[in-house]
Length: 137
Image (cartoon, rainbow, N blue to C red):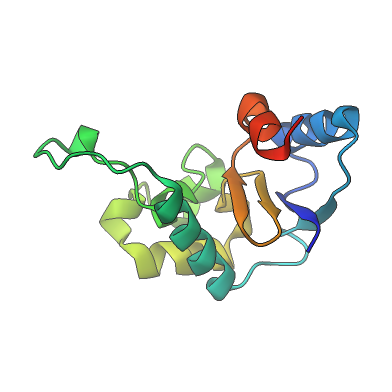
């Protein structure tokens, strides 16, 4: 499976990601989930991958010390789409099933870009140093 970049073509962060990949000479396929959609099963798989990639922390009673679940991290809560469809609720308040269903139906509310390589490596958001480390550039 090739390197796939998921997102929305006209997003400024996506443009930065495309420019970085092009400058690094990395071939990729682009999946515009605004046009082509994303399945609930795919969102669930990504959430599971994000959970598995998080370092484990000692349990505390402080919510700030608790990392977001993978399904929570998939939501782009800063964008207008999230504010419109989620009625200002956080993913934690909505719960996993409702959050993923909202994201499936409103793909503009999915954080972007999502970079997936060989169905294993998954990077959420554009972070040039993390991308360089993962992609060996």
